[in-house]
Image (cartoon, rainbow, N blue to C red; front, side):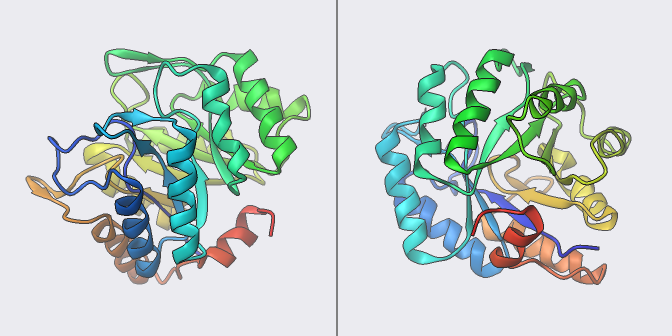
Length: 271
């Protein structure tokens, strides 16, 4: 088995201070939290930013400040979101790629997202794939439904995504594929054999799916973007608590944790 890559998603675009007072929102808070998670064992940081009111944002200057603050602190792999708001214009969503992260999210299709619809048309996805390809940014193919795998493979067959691909399975979003073992097994069996993969378990599915991924040879994403509770009714006071728990579980499975440098090698990222 490869070493385990832990991704931390500290903020996201949905979790609010009303849900948890501990979520980091401004660039300094996010950078400090990412740094603490890096020290705890996270190799990748998935970054969303917020505006001054704590609302989801794709403001380029805020991204730039957040990225620079993190780079000043550590060598964690940066993975910037290209969603940031369900109704943002295409050009605004693609703009963070100009900051040259090693990874960026590639949400491979449209999906119900609670009461809203997260739209990702094929023309937009091709445009996003071209932008990433031109900048040397590897797509993290986010899969909320099984059909999104086929969408990504069709785009790869056009030469717009380089293989082997890296998939991030997002399970448990209200309106999308439920977070259960059967669905994770199906998705893993569906992707090309040379792919790497990681899983996000939203809400109560985060812990069982993380344990499955550790055992199956996949990788894991944790953090307050996806879940705020360590256990029923107990809020995590820091994203590091989620990272530390995965490190402990992986140790029980005798699966070592990947450093950022090792994660770059496993995922075939540019150096």
